Image 1 (cartoon, rainbow, N blue to C red):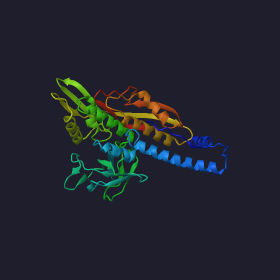
Image 2 (tube, rainbow, N blue to C red):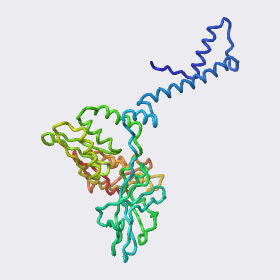
Image 3 (cartoon, rainbow, N blue to C red):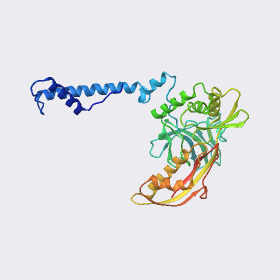
Image 4 (spheres, rainbow, N blue to C red):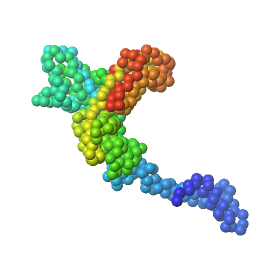
Length: 367
């Protein structure tokens, strides 16, 4: 039975009608009368009770529960909200004098120019400058800079910063003078939203006892947030290929291995499969913008941020349209009055990555 909600005025009106109907004499219900005050007080209590009923009702359904209530509802089915993901990227450490070797240890902390966001250097044992005995990246004699991987201190979308905004070295680094990020940092995501959790739960129900593309997709999606995938069927006899991307275009081998293990649990009998990273196409964008009412540099930065976010959000097989770039620039700020000289990889053609490819931002220069 659906709850019939009433507002304050209708509660008072219905109570007044009931009182008058039960009385043989005319009742004084004018503003300020004692009886009207009593009816209004009762209506206020009824509104509060009605609100409590609505709250309890909303907590008993996954479609209306929120936050911790939704988490407890999903826990009954063995599901949990996917945690936030830290942004990753690369920064360049530089120095003015190269006569002595220098070391950038793993764990070195750097920050944006306003000190608002922190990033820690991560270990990459395959990096040419990595030294396992010293636990960091070595700048040899004559080497002026080194490009190293970093990860945001705090997980979340706030770690996705534009190129050129990291400028502070928060730890003491003898022989190292500067730090900067040539390209944006990406991949940071806040904890899974309520709507996304409900959608994943729907896919979970659709995947039960089935060996379908939905089941394969759910297996991949449950590993972590921000993953994209594409299932190519009938690649060979009984063979399907799953392309997995974490938003960077270059997912780590460990992630691909986890995806393979998850898919193994739901694959159809008599089939085999492969998990592969996408074929990445880098987008280089240049354009000029004119602005009125705000500094041109501010308008250009807004356009750059909008373009980088759009490219980074493209899915597997999704094309980057050249004509879309100007639209993104105009939409980034109402102060932008003109967009000219728009080039995508030096031309005006769209970037179409193919069914198992992705387009990711490279150099985005807005002047």
